[in-house]
Amino acid sequence: MTAADVDVRPHGSTIEIVLTGEIDLSNSDEVKDRVFASIDNHLVGVTIDLGGLRYIDSAGLRIIFALAERLRLLQTDCRVVAPEGSATRRVLEMSGMGAVVRLEP
Image 1: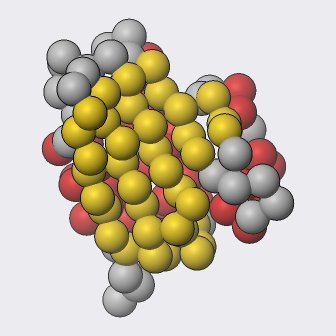
Image 2: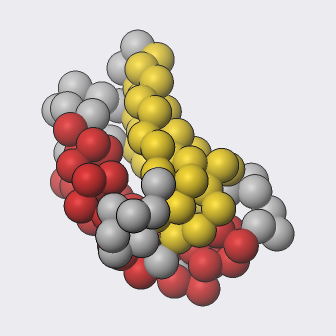
Image 3: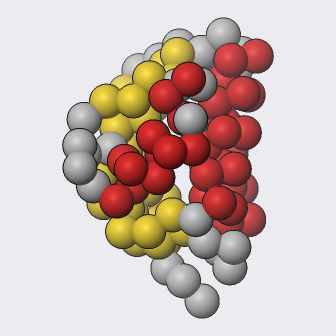
């Protein structure tokens, strides 16, 4: 099984979700459950840090798209941090993620 770590760091009314390792079909349900469990109705902002992510496939992208939609419905700001030039950043850009959330380096 592929290994991924989900570290949730609260900062008052915002949280930072740091995803590291690899996200694919084999672990995407567990990652999604942990990410979505960290979201409540009182947050004003969520940052998803993908700087330590070595691999993400379509199952991982679905998690981020679904989270972005949930946060949009909650009127909560969402931004995704992925280093410029990284493989993760290229996958996000090719998927059209920039039209859904704010991508930051």
